[in-house]
Length: 326
Length: 137
Image (tube, rainbow over the protein chains, first blue to last red):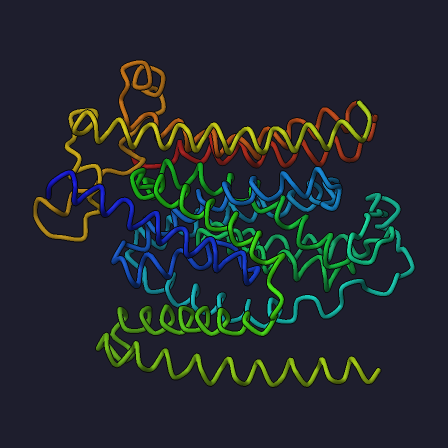
């Protein structure tokens, strides 16, 4: 290969990273979750290097966007650090599990798990914005001990929003799993973190998403250093994706603010579900237990994702209609 | 340190970490192309991710880039080590956030959160310093 071809390949990976960052920020799922399927399915990059590059890129995007949210005082740094106790521990467990899996050439497990996590993340992510501010719950004992009372200024509602976080322990349990998934699959697992803070701890959506954003970097840094020594980071790929994903998510955030038609998000969800199904099937195929023909698999993934997203669309539309009635 | 300053410092450190890292990464890639490789590896070898067989199954990854060579590599304008340094700056950015938070909690005499930040830092350094001991080499 001439250097020019290699340079072209480098730029091609940057473009892939850019698309992943863009799609990740427009859907709220994060760049890494889109990057890994993109690199493995369309670029033929081994999943071991795809996850390594993804984990590194996740730190870049997290730091980039958290910078703004921390400054605006929407992220709750205190709650974030407290929950990192579990995510960092989880990330160590997850990365070591990854080392075990790759040492035993069980790559198919990573594909299948990745597909499953991606598909399961779609539902809570698509619901986003449904309960912007949860009803103020009575503080429990953990609210007091872990000082989880907070306030932020909501620019859209033009008022201060007060909140009490509850059930700190429940949050920690979810975070442990989020950390394990992050270390194992090389993603930030932001969707799962949001789930923990939203469902378990009753925090407002804005606080939840921005705090998760801030936390993702710390979790990914834990996994990254283990990935580094294990040799899962191909620096050429990682450099390309870090630059690409960062740029993509930056542009994504700008577009998101201006995007007037929220229904367009469904198109992106369809793409994500396609990637999810394809990962799942690819994993099963490499284990020789399911359709091994590439073309048939792609068609099957496309079909399944269309059905899946249509169902999800209808379910969430119905929920929204009920919300309006109430 | 007031609450006001604390958030602003975090914000600046986060942004600075990303900017420095991206500059290092881009410089590293540019150096590799200008010098036709780095560290005795050709551009092809550096870019390869080993999906082929035989000679093309080779791939250069982080396990063959010792951190002890980092300083020396950067001084000698070795592109690979520029990228490595950029990636490590990225990894250290969130770590420095935890360190700054620890300082803030200590200043506010918030013992519980001092303890929690220390546990998080312990996890981070455990992953960086203790876990690798049990790897190959």
